[in-house]
Every structure is written in structure tokens, then in C-alpha cells.
Image (cartoon, rainbow, N blue to C red; front, side):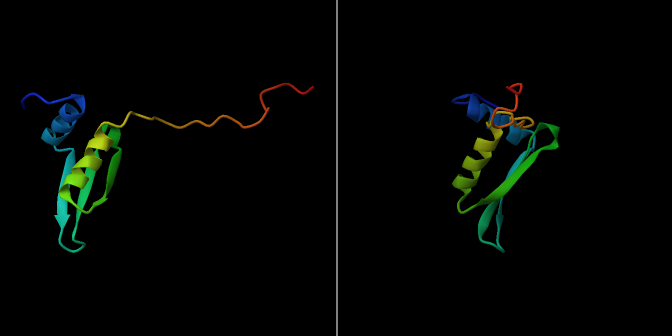
Length: 83
């Protein structure tokens, strides 16, 4: 696979080699459709005007930190006992 310039490029190269990312041109819309399938079955997709932009979006998704489930804390003073 070769040496990558940095960790982000290496992750993109690995995902590309595994077939988990794709950028395809849609003649119908005249734009590029990008798709990424990450571990656990989570997928991301979207549209870009140029192929370079589409690969930029793919690189951002592949290198996005895992967020997991978002938990919200209650707003206000709900955690304090009544005065």
C-alpha cells in the first residue's frame, strides 16, 4: 500500500483498499456522490461538485472521531436538592 504522508491519509488509504469508501459521478445530477461505510454499519453519504471535494468529504468522515451516543445533561439546577 505504501507510505502515507500522515495518519489521515493512511486511514483513507486503508478504507479505500477495503472497499468501504466510494466516489461516483452521477450523470443524471452532474455531481459526485460519495459514500462511506464505517465499522458498526454506520454510513455517511453526500454530494459534491468536484471529485476533489468529494474525496475531501470522505477524508473528513473517515478521520472523524467516534462520537458514540450523545447524552444530554439536564439544564438548570435539577441535580440539587430542594432548599
